[in-house]
Image (cartoon, rainbow over all chains, first blue to last red; front, top):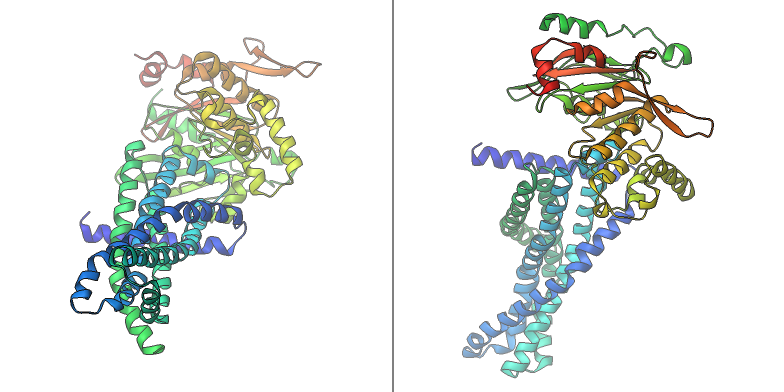
Length: 256
Length: 296
C-alpha cells in the first residue's frame, strides 16, 4: 500500500470509529461509571506530569528571553510574552504531547492486548459493542480532561516563569503578574481551550483505532502502541498549525 | 468414499425447514438451531469456506474437526455473526442472521454461549465479574446476579475461585470460568473453540465432561471445534446420567446404546470432507481421515 492510500485508509478507519463512538452515545447503556473511571485514570493520573512540564517550560522561557528583553530595556513585558506563548501554543501542545505519550500508549496497548487475547471478540460474543464500552468512554474522558489539564499546564507555566523571574532575575512579582494580565486576552484563552478539545479527540481516536486494529500477537501490540504515540503526536503538531490559523482568523473577525 | 460422495452426504442432511413454525413446541424441535446454507467465504484470494451446508439439531453436539487453517473456527464466528459470509445464509433458530445489524445480532447472541480457546477472560475483572458480565450488562439486580454466578461456578466446579483475578488461575481453570461465563443466561447453543488445546489430559477430560453434561442434562446444542481426537472419544462415546441423589455419572455408550446426538464433521480446505458418527469416522478408509486420526 503506498503512503497516500495508507493515509486515506487510516483516515477512513478513524472517521468510521468516530461515527460509531458518537452513535454509541445515543443508545443505552452509556457506561457513565466507565467514563468517570477513565477520567480518573487519564485526567487525574496525568496531572503531575502535565504540571511539571508546564512549570519547567514556563521557567525556561523566562530564563531564555529575560536577558534579551533586558538588553532592550523591555523586561517588564516578560509576562506578556510568556502568557501569549504558553496559553496559545505551548500549554495545549505540550499537555497534548505528554498525554499522547502517557495515555495514548496505554489505551493502544490495553486494547491491542485485548484483541490478541480474544477479549474483544468475547465482548462482542457476549452482546456488547466494544466501541460503546471501550472507545466512547475513553474518547469522552479525553475530550473533557485534556482542556482541564491544559489549563493546569498554563497556570503551572506562568507560576514557573514567575519563580524564575523573581528568583534568578530579581523581578518584582506584582510587575510580573500585571504584565501577564496585560498579555492575556479572551481570544488566547478561547483558543487555548478549543485546541485541547481537538487534540483530545485526535489522541483518543488514533490510539483506539491503532489498538483495535492490532494483529500479529504480542509483537503487534508493541507496534501498534508505537504507531499510536507517533501518529497522534505528529497529527497534533500538524493540526496545531492549521487550528492556530483557523482560530486566528475566526476569533479576530468575530470577537474583536 | 470419493470426495463428491462425501460432499453429497453432507448436503443431504440439510432439511427444508422454511415451512416449520418455530414457536410450535413440538415441531419447533425439528427446526435446526444452526443451519448453514451454501456458505462461501474468502479473505482476499484465500478461500476459507466453499459452499458449506450443514445443520445442527436441538440437543445435538457437532464436532468440527480438521487441521489448522481449514476454516473450523470460522464456522463458529459465522454463527455468532462476528464475520459475514460472502454468499449463502447462516440461520440461527430459523432466523437468517446474514443481513442482521448489531442490534439484531445482539439479540441472537443472547441465545449463544461461546467458549474461547484460551478462555478470553477479561483481565481487569474478577472471576465473579467475568461470569456476571452478561447480567451486569443487562442491569440485572445484584442478588440475582450473585445467585446465578454461584450456580454457574458450581456447575464448572470452581465456586472457590469466585474472588480471584484471571491472572491467578491455571489454564484449565481459566477455560472453566470461560465455560461458566458462556453458560450464564441459559443459552440454547454453546460454541466451543478448541477448549482443550494445550491442557493436560485430566483437565481436558473435565472440560469434555462439562460438554457431555450440557448435551445430555441441559439439552444444549453445541458446536465443538477441535483437532484433538480424545475430545471426540469422550464426547462421542460417553453419556451423562443423573442418579437419584442428583449426582452426575458418565457411562460409555458401547453396544447397547448408540449416541445419535453427536456428529462429526471434518473440514478440509474450506470444504466439508466428512459428516457422520464417531464410529463411521474411525472406520473410514479415506486417506486424509486416517492420517488425521493416526497421525500418519
